[in-house]
Image (cartoon, rainbow, N blue to C red):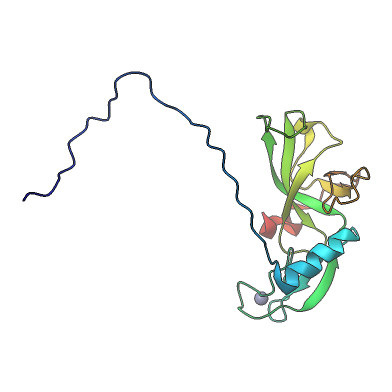
Length: 172
Ligand SMILES: [Zn+2]
């Protein structure tokens, strides 16, 4: 008896190539955020952003994961950060997302909230997309039409002078 051998193939196919299929799929799951992230999520309901400080390296992690990934020790000291922050880096989005009512182009940025040692990401508005820059100072804008909104709808410029590069270069 001989084993089946994979036939050689040149990588060329007859007819039109299939470039995509639509497959309806759904997954229901229960997510347990744990102690640190539960506190973070509860604080967001009050429109506060709370991180946790590492007792060893003193870095403030937002969102908190319950431990410092560098030092390997538990973090328990809660620290409120923001609400203002600094754009550390950003990208201009030119592709309109399905089911998302945001006109393109728009800017998505990494934002280091004041007091945080980790940058969050969020949309920037209230400024032309081509004027967003590294160091731009921003503040959150909450969507009052949705009481369940746990995250700011976007961030907008505060009008403050840009942050000095040295103040956020470690957070890019
Ligand atoms: Zn640490």
